[in-house]
Image (tube, rainbow, N blue to C red; front, side):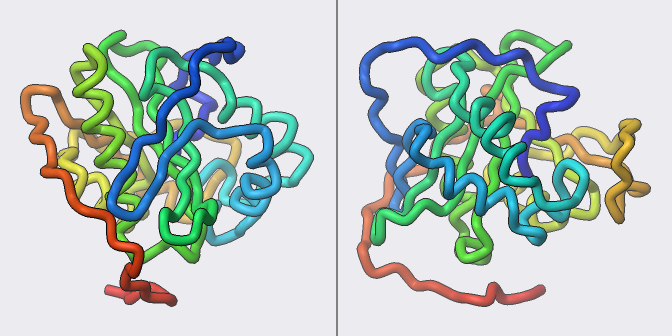
Length: 221
């Protein structure tokens, strides 16, 4: 699941010089603002056919497009921390594993933001998407006046739907949107999940352990 950027997001602002933003740390991840030096990792991530199967046109993104459009979008300034895009690093290895984002929505309340993420296949099946997403949800409700977090995905993308539910979001609607790119499964529509500040319950902090259980390929079912 990740924000597409074609319909729902407000226009980004150019990043401004300012103080260094401290990372958001979870038991296994370090989330820090995306940097220009992440270009090669972002190209590899967006070029993976499996990662892109339920995103955009359902096909890998050419490197030139990633560097010319996707990377500048990930580097843009979307408001106060934790709004924006966060590169995710494995704390045990310092390896780039993907990115997460929180962005204002177009046409909706100014108090609502949309959650998205995109992770390498090697990070799938380990609960990292849930861990990173939940950390940002807690951060946005703690540090800002945002009243609602929204997330969307294809109805057939059961993996992302499970992540939304584990993070605490609940189904709100199923809908269809016109698009020139017909991804297999698009006929079933897209789903929107949401979590309000009123229903939010922060998680208890957990300790970091360098030795993390890993499972690859991810278990099915």
